[in-house]
Amino acid sequence: MIRIGLLGFGTVGSATYEILAEQEASLRDCLGQDITVEKILVRDLAKYETTAAYPLMTTDIAEIINDPSINVLIELTGSIEGIIEPLKQGLASGKHLITANKALLAKHMEELIALASRHNVGLRYEATVAGAIPIISNLEEIIALNQVNSLSGVLNGTCNYLLSRMEEGLDYAEALREAQDLGFSEADPSSDVEGYDTMYKLRILSTLAFKRPVLESEISCTGITGVTGAEIQEALAAGKRIKLVGQATLVDGKVTATVQPTLVDRCSTLGGLDGGENAVIVDTSNAGELIFSGLGAGGRPTAFAVLSDLIHLFARPMGS
Ligand code: HSE
Image (cartoon, rainbow, N blue to C red; front, side, top):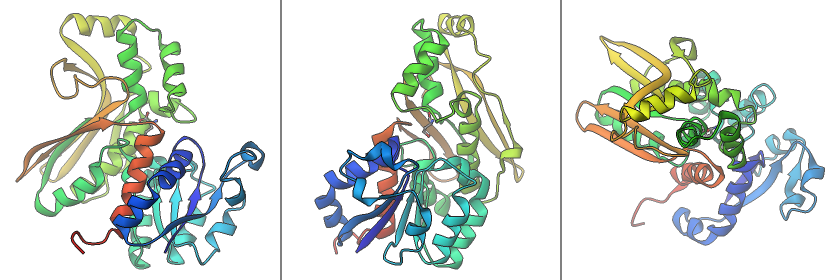
């Protein structure tokens, strides 16, 4: 039986809980065993008194980490300092870990991967990059059969939404409010608009794709706060759009990586993205250019990625 400790019950946590309940029968069918959420970590119990999941909730993470019946942690808190040690304890005690926490993974990726491997448990992180797009699981397959030459993409739904709405004449503050209402933005949206969120994602993707640590400190990063309405309109008039693009290239064994506002043709893959959409383009040695696109942010798209990790951890082989 899969017994989940759900850490965090915000936009993605609550969507994950809902999809688990709604898709219970088909998930059980796919995984060949029952799935239950045993406990849920929240910051403020009082906020959830009227929700159905309230009896499962606790503010004490030790109750979850020390519960031997819980075999999977799903970490959706968005914090780093308060959570890293308990997560490490969880891995060391044999619990699988699924996380959507890109800032945490960007900081501790090598350490967590090594720890999971040492304790023979799974560490899955599909939801850390590009929302619903199954880029991590596809990259795992790609790198087994190819060298990745480069990857580039629009990796932040908030920025893409903002830039799209500003093309329609909305001012920056109003467009940001909308992105927050849609559940796209981080709790502190400066991580989105300053480019850090894209940088974390590029760090994670590049490290996987190029099979070597590509650290945040190696990525030059400029966000969209300096992009003006006039520049956006000027780009449109020239048949182009401004997108926040993350790009990493392998040349002579060295990875060069940047995050920056970039002019792209309207009719290109990245130029065609609207609202909260993301895309990742991967140039490979054998499979050529591969393009992945879809919704890059929001509760349900991200929860889908989280639960796809559960499938990767536990799915029965096809046909069994
Ligand atoms: N704030 C992020 C974004 C959420 O806007 O893309 C998904 O990672």
